[in-house]
Image (cartoon, rainbow, N blue to C red):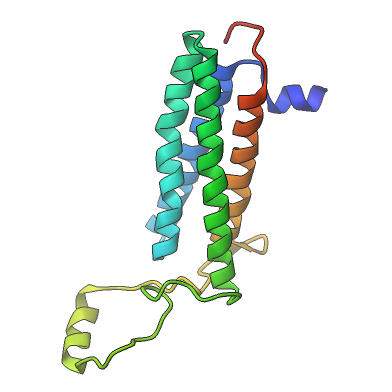
Length: 173
């Protein structure tokens, strides 16, 4: 029981704030790595949308919880859980692209399908840098960043789902 209390404090406000902080921390880490030269691919950028959406949702959920609107807060947690569950699935798709289990989008992994004028291609390459979605740029403890996104998104989905299911008999802190 202690572990559950430690992971899920009884305050919806604190739980929503924790999700907000986690979403912002993941985004900050992504931006820092990008600043260090790890360019995100198209799939990486798309995976960030869940964190961009979850941060304000978590802030709203915390606001509703702080005003004793526990039913609305529970709905907010459920929505956050769905956002992160979908992102975990999308990040897993990206891991599969990196591992060559299935093909990725042609915009960042495919070959050219039509004849192209070499001059036009060279001109386009001067201003465009396409980062391949099927090449891992960085591994941390054996997982690619997409793999870590699966872990983070799944953990946040579970946390938010548990927060949505709990009954609230005490006032939020």
